[in-house]
Image 1 (cartoon, rainbow, N blue to C red):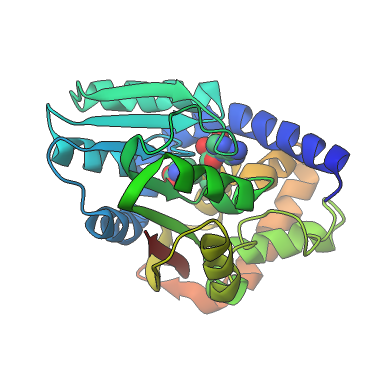
Image 2: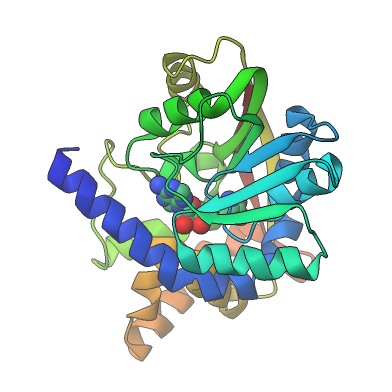
Length: 282
Ligand SMILES: C[S@@+](CC[C@H](N)C(=O)[O-])C[C@H]1O[C@@H](n2cnc3c(N)ncnc32)[C@H](O)[C@@H]1O
């Protein structure tokens, strides 16, 4: 992307995050229930120790980092960060509800980490780098602040074919003219789905040891209205589109989704597979 386009992209991501933060707070428990295997993998692979300082980037509501905060204990510290002040507030409320006293909440752009070199013992970033305008810059910043030999654990969404929970809606919105087709060069949920690309980005940022693994999750919805309400609350740019639909168009899309979801009927509702690409690097 050209510099102007990058700037405009960054502004858009920021505005969407600000607008979507209340929806992420409403759906927080449901999101966590769905992606528990991803969160568990990341914290296990990070292997934080008592007394460690752990940084979470693009933390959203913060739950991945909060698991690490419980492990590093009173002598350790979690720095929970996000570019969106509204998201940082959501994380702050969640951390307070959990009774965590060892967390600093900071507004921070993953592309410009405002910390000293070699100052943290571990970094977590779940579903963040893939949305950052310049992931190479964010990963090189991550490497800079991470102490030698310590780990980064990240997750991004895997291939679109493995994630119908979101691609069916996205394709329908494109087909019906509500949004342009994604450009291959732009950041989006699948921009780091390729294992080769993610590995190359990590190695290019100076990580010498990289291990990746696909992690499966399952999204569950009672019916299409339940799916639409979850997407309306959480689905980033798609949520912005849904919120702007006329009532008639929303009904048409709801009906067409019902047809498109026919292959996913299970347990009295819909069950969709999802797959993330996780990586641990040092
Ligand atoms: C899909 S959400 C994931 C939130 C959380 N990590 C989780 O897994 O639940 C993406 C998050 O990335 C944040 N984000 C996007 N670009 C960012 C950047 N350049 N620096 C820091 N955070 C960013 C957004 O504000 C949003 O909270």
